[in-house]
Length: 279
Image 1 (cartoon, rainbow, N blue to C red):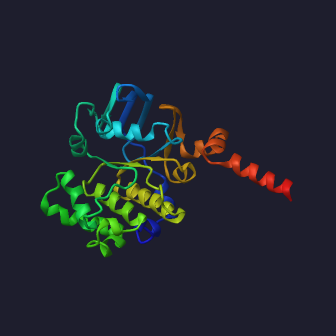
Image 2 (image 1 turned 45 degrees about the vertical axis):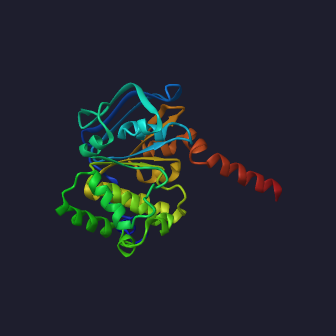
């Protein structure tokens, strides 16, 4: 990951000031269940504007994954369904569309756990993403070059089976595969799980570069609130399938409840206090 352009532009302050634009993704009062019985979402309302990088925060089981799957129309693959509300991308309702139709609109998702095809080479995995986006054959080469420019390590591994690559390389492959569909909006589900802290930071730095330099709108579900709030413009916090907080990243970083429950400051302070008493 460290070879990507994100590492080069990590300290570029100009990348932190996006221009607010029109709403691109609008999720309104969405409820969802699994197997018509298990309530996963009860009230999710959020707006992602064109050109923004938005974080979706919450503990494990709070509904982050379900929200992303509802947007990308992948809930049915897990025996889930949206039971109430509306989801629109660029003014088009997506609730009656299939996953491929949503990709064609310009939405691509990177699933949790990377989900590479282990027996296919890195380059073959990337080409699968181009097929999902209905890219013309003449543009596949341009898409590959774009991915390799961002992730030079993948160019070195292009003929290697993805299953033999490191976790960081597999995550690069998964993101690169989504980029091959040339999305306007990129959804990422827990992209830093299993990655070393340095690689996780470089991944978020890359997402910010992609967002600022190419204008790709990013919605990322992430448990690491400290990292997400460092790079995102705004954030929503989910609890038990409901949006309970929203605001700019700077505002949420200063809230005591966010500090205690999501940034881990309460635990750190307790640890220092115990260490003092033990000494």
